[in-house]
Amino acid sequence: MAGALSSLAPEAVESFIGIEGYLTRTRGVGGVIKLRPEDFLAWELLTDGLDARSAYESWRGLSEGLGDHVLAVMRKRRIDTIRACTVIAKKLGIKPGEIGVCGIKDKMSVSWQFITLPSGSISQRGLSIGELIQVLPISYAARKLSSKKLARNVFEITVRNLSGELEEA
Image (tube, rainbow, N blue to C red; front, side, top):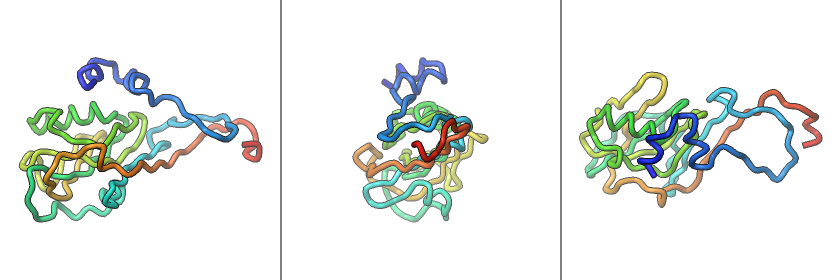
């Protein structure tokens, strides 16, 4: 799947993986989501209780320890997870497949998600790639991250240009 995704135009990725539509149990209010990336905030909570957004905002550096991997928190804006990992891998001189993730987050968002990188591949100060991607190392880990560690995703969504009355929704 990663090979197929890397050949797609950036605007086609969300459609390909099926995250361009939304379902709700309540009546719609019209409006637009994702007018700006800041309108769609998403972050991960791991099974051990770690919160990606909190970990990023309260980052104090890489803790001491041992492990073949480094658990890091990535903040990304206006780039999907697959492309972000490809950019990070190129910058660090590793293969994209060496990066562990729990899941894929939307392109048109600001997202905080956990990733693992091979030990020694990232500086203790982290990595910043312009406004798109920031990666902050948190701790050492024995294993590469997978979807099994994801407890849930949290979302903060802003709907703009509403049509109709809120009481009707």
